[in-house]
Length: 192
Image (cartoon, rainbow, N blue to C red; front, side, top):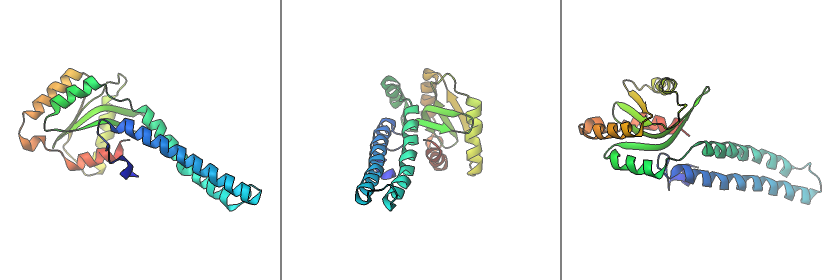
């Protein structure tokens, strides 16, 4: 179903709101489809005990999965437009991702913006309850499993310090500022 999100891919500023809308539409459609199959089977046979009832119940499985996706979409809080404008003005040639939401067994980690370079991942998180140490451990575990080494991770809670760091990185040579494709793919695969 990734083709539905090509207009605003994961990591773009518009993705969170767009995904929420698309997922709600898909969820409603799937529930209506199951209900329709049940009603057709009931009207055709006069009983709930028919093959279309089984198909309708099985059709509820993907519908319920989409309900979970919709709930997750509402957990992602969009970045304010003023913050976005500041980041877009400072990002320059760097590769950035908006609204990354990492989940683990113990905690969830909402990240407002991430920048991935050849040897580092830096991010901005406005959530005051964010546990940076636990997040770094979580992400490094995934990187280790994927064979990625020697990546530094830093998450800023101060917007101005984050913008200053983006400016500093932009002044480095091109080799340092290029995106690490392995890290980018890993992050896009493990985030919501």
